[in-house]
Amino acid sequence: MPLADKVAPAPREVRVAGLITALLGVALLVLDGVLLASPSATGSNVLAEAGFYALFAIAVLMCGAGLAAGHTWARSPGVVLALMTIGVGWYLALPSEQPAPGVPLIAVGVLVLVLLFRQPSRAWALGQHADETEEEAAERGGLEGRRREREGSDDPES
Image 1 (tube, helix red, strand yellow):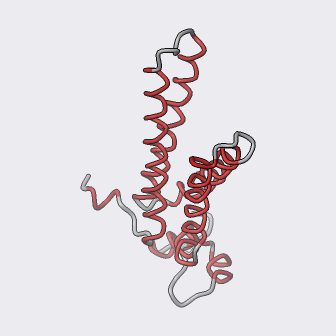
Image 2: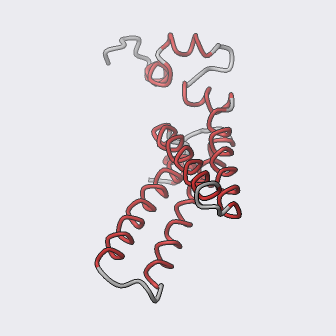
């Protein structure tokens, strides 16, 4: 299957949010490597923690790749990951008194949220036509309704 068939049309905002989310996944993999390479990393708890970080990093990378490829299924997980990023940044900046990594992490989370909630991103997620409002797109059935239109079926049950 050619790469062009795997990449769906999506606005630039969604693709940039996907790349940023994928970078967060790479950062988690780096954190995982640092944790395992640490001289104080001994015992089964460290291995369990590293395993969790590795699995979570893979999930974050998949979400970022989904957004970058223009797949609508990745938008909701991307929003959740952005909110989690803001929460981790807040915890680093305030209770842990480490504003140097915390504040930029908050900024990254907010940036991803803004990108995913801009008008072109919302229109993409709804499958909105250029000449219709968000309400009209929702009444039509959103992205699913647009898929039915492309296939030539007016039956909402198909």
